[in-house]
Amino acid sequence: MARKISITQDMIKEAAFELTRSEGIESVTARRLADKAGCSTQPIFRVYEKMEQLHEEVFQMAVDYFSEFYETGKQKEKVSDKPFVQFGVLYIEFALKEPRLFTMLFLSTNRYGRTLYELLNGSTGAFVREMNRARAEGAKDPGDLFMKMWIFIHGAACMTITGDYDLPKEETIRLLEESYEKCAS
Image 1: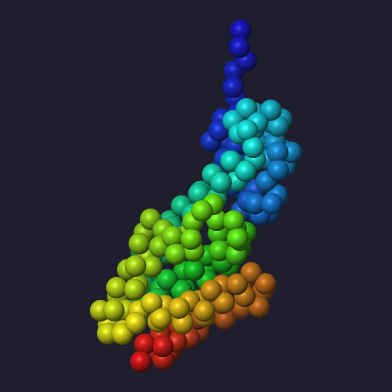
Image 2: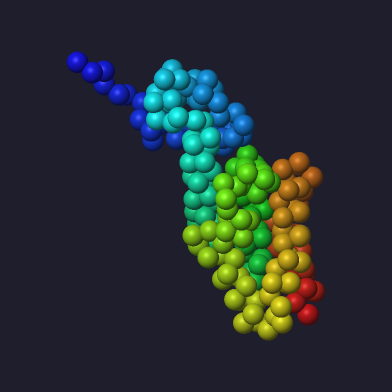
């Protein structure tokens, strides 16, 4: 009689995602994952021929998690009517609350064939929506405007990873709104 499979692919992926959230994708090795999932390495390699396959699935889980984080945050609280401000605040908050996922998604050169644009726009269309809002408000070159805003947004998010950005949310909103006004004119 065949043994009952007690460790599923979903259990392995979930354990790998949680390990990534707490320690980073580089910590998702077969041994560490087996410890986290409470199994031997055999169930892992039964499902995944190579750990890289699992890493790519965890990456996609992180992309989905970021999209959900953004959409939930946007619906929960509107912080500004200015384009790029809400996006910026949520991006910075994501870096603060999920530094390991942020690092994997936005500070790694391995994005599994996805561009930064694809990650930012995600399934929500956030990037395109912000560009269209800026255009509707009279921005002559929304792409250039976004690039200028992006330098501040991404820089601030990266500074949260190193512990060098500790401005309160209200101050971040004010700075983003001022940047938008200066860059849009």
